[in-house]
Image 1 (cartoon, rainbow, N blue to C red):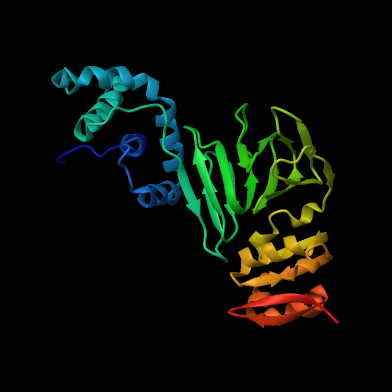
Image 2 (image 1 turned 30 degrees about the horizontal axis):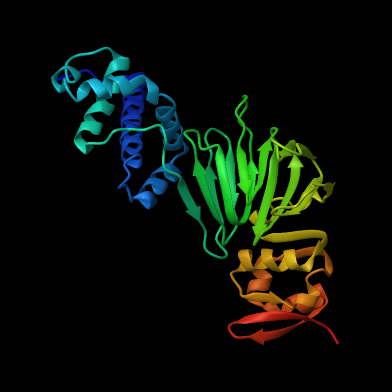
Length: 316
């Protein structure tokens, strides 16, 4: 034989090194103030959960290789010499940094995700933690560990299963939510936020009111609200948009229509006088998209064509 065949363990180790090198490269590039390839970076993160985990691991190890990068500016030859495994990792980062002429700072740029109306997208938050976006939703992730989420608009469901003391913090307007090991859904429309918890608990306004929202409860609030109050909720509705259904128990029609617009991509409007009317039932996203008029008998309203969309009005 001309050469030895690497063992499975050696191949796995080589794969780990290659992935870590790729993560280092992205970490350095995303800290460049001129970096603008966010779509490519997002695609790389989402192509494999291992990519996101490797990137987060590199970010958390940044303090270990910053001194080596600083030395590399004046002694590049020493960086390329034979070094122990841990220092070799640092030297790769130094080489990339020198090539791009960047000074890394511990402030990674936020990563923005958005969905088109009717689109559902899953975003890894590291490990087994996931965030599912409904249509017409925009979020930003910040921090080295992707555990700071800002919901700009739309609807998300968070499924947080990773053990440990770390907590995912979500901001919706001026409302901060911190999980206590949980699955929950947050919707934001204008200045209003809805929170529904189906497992575990969520702490709302941890630096102020410290309202705990438990399994089977919800919070409806508006930016600047002086008080927060949890109410009973139907947990079957949490994340139902993933199944192509929208389920409600005594839900204001204004919220129902907002969910329909996100999930179907249809321009559906509601007259101001109808927003507070309540609805209990389940709507099929596919059926509404196929025939918007099917909403009439289900919601007890009449539908009138309005431009390229539909306006829901009370029946005479």
